[in-house]
Image (cartoon, rainbow, N blue to C red):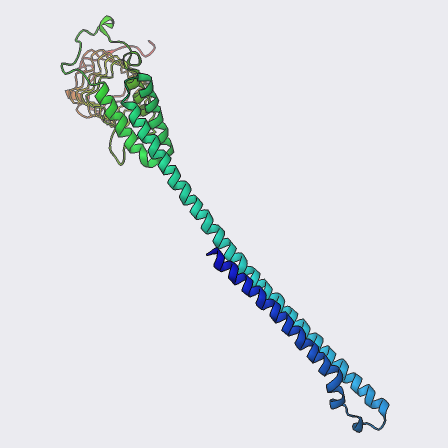
Length: 334
């Protein structure tokens, strides 16, 4: 394509040079005719009584012819200038098209390279999750978070992968775990028991990585005891059957979450938003609900709320009587 364009440019330049030569020859020929041939023909000696009048008449003819020639030269010059401008515009247009084509090709190549790099980084991060070294697994989790931030198309897959990782590496005990809820029987903090699971949960709690479409984060049946989820943005999360005893969920956004049969005994939910959450069979004994919002909660009557702690700032659904449900009220000042 480049060789063909260069050949056309050379051919056009040669034609322009030839046109200039032809014009110069024609101009010389016209000048010679105007000076030497036409004056005697248009003002012959025989038409005048004396030679002086004939010479003056012929000179006048030459002057007129020269003026005509000058006008023609101006017209031709204007045409040549206009034509040169058109050619320059055409050349500029072709140059811009070629440049745009090169830029598009470079951009396409960069996109391909970027997608290839993201795919490679995604695969490497997934491989790290299978390592026996917990530090390597944590590095893989953070690498997946970076992939999700750089590629919106991969964010859903990363969210699903991290949820699956948490479900696999921290499943809730089949028998519901310990039944003694004293502080002595509480397990260690999640970051001490399973730092990799805590890291995956920390990435998801930010709320910036979500599954595709309207799919929720699926953390059902997981052991998240004593996990730090303060201010977590987990709207619509599926925590059905999850073990959240002693978990910190203060000021968490759990609107529309599925907490069916979740164990929230002794959990801290102060200031949390649970608007429209599903709570069938959820256990809240000893849970702190001070300042929490439970507007529009579903099946709250079927939740085990006896022994939960609330205050006057806790917001309940209409027609629900917290005192009849066995909830303990404390002063907001406390």
